[in-house]
Length: 595
Ligand code: GTP
Image (cartoon, rainbow, N blue to C red; front, side, top):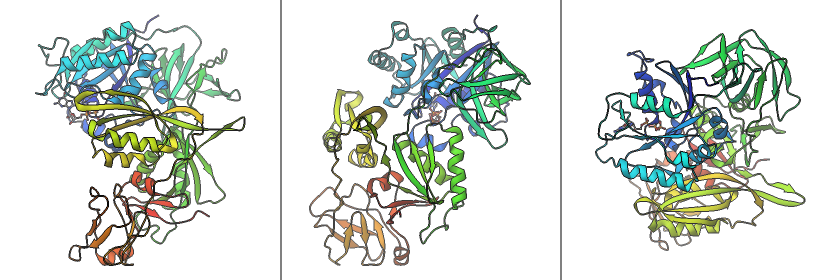
């Protein structure tokens, strides 16, 4: 039977195309928001990192009541796949809304998620948003979406997607481009009409598949998933099983059961097949678990969580400046924080080491770990990290390494340097097609090793005009050594200043970091502006390398170790025996041997 009172839908959008505004508007119009409640504060993605990097890290649930139907909207991680999360989220829904800016058109960042949705045969509603923009070019954008669907092998039904024109900002929508209605009803109606109601076996034995895990101090671990079969009630006994883990076979009692309402969870006594629910109070509930009736414990299969491909050492900061900038600095605090992360991030691994001060943290690529580091930094943690290490696999005495599939959109003028640099890093170009507005799209298959530190170099090389996305692409036999980038050695200068790999000794008064992108070559002339204390760097050999960013008083120069401007930049320059010091205020390269 069909649960006509429910629609489960995922939302896919490129950053800034208006997803949050759109969902807020739907919430407002459905009457869930009381007028004095601040919408901005309760936005779907609370993590400002997501905004900055244009990615969504955790999927979140919103539920909206429209007439007699409850619409569960699930946010999808827009960028890379941190361990099968996209697929697990998409398995809960029976349709997706693709939000596309009426001017910008579809962007490569959402391609990966869209591809997964199309593979799962989900019907797509295309919301052409920001239709109010004077530069809007909706017809052209629809063509671009169509091209993208064809490129991604959409099925015939999927290609005949319904389109809704929306202005999330003005709260209007329409099916007919020429007549914008002054509410969101056309979009609501489209969702009801084009997203199938969940098809359920309401009478069968209970099965709830846990798809994501949330965590909160009061409730502990919270499992979120769809009731696939039967119904679930508080105070009932159930059994928890896992297809991949036969040992997990435990009797539990359902004590705390929730459904979603607006942006919150509300406690319920009962939930039926087709509903998306949250369960708290079940110790070590995990992704992939199935909660079943006692009489018929049948585990459902789920998307396996992929193995980590990269690891880094996280340790307590024990340098001369330790503890001056961070709120949380001790090994206990670091340990607690890292282990807490495991509650919600299933693709992360944390291992203890012989030293109580160091932990090995493994995840899905450099970006995955960078996000964790940045988040902790913003929360007030101070610690140090090592150079990322790729995790090889040995099968029958052969060494395999993780590969990445990289998609790059660049203006033509920068193509040459991208191709050359990735070539040196053992990247193999697999595709090259012209895309919108003078951009070319390049696709590479490259060892994960080859991408370490490349992002910031790429941004410099393309003067910030390039877009780069990468995704894990399986294991391949070891591709051989990648030549390390020369970081230069001693250089001469007027004052006899020496420069060693990006660190600049100002006549022994201190160290400064040279902005990445400024490579150090013999023959550089380095000078210091005595008035402003700015460092000037004149380059003889490479004309386009001009200046570096650095300033500070002499006193500061003496005290401050080299300053690095971003984590990626630090990781680009770090060597095996060095550490990057992470504090809420600074990211610095610290020369230190891990012993
Ligand atoms: P993130 O939250 O950063 O992932 O982006 P998002 O996709 O959720 O976009 P968000 O809703 O934050 O909107 C991005 C910007 O576009 C904001 O400045 C909005 O005010 C603006 N915006 C959203 N919808 C519309 C629209 O329909 N018309 C116009 N003109 N601007 C819009």
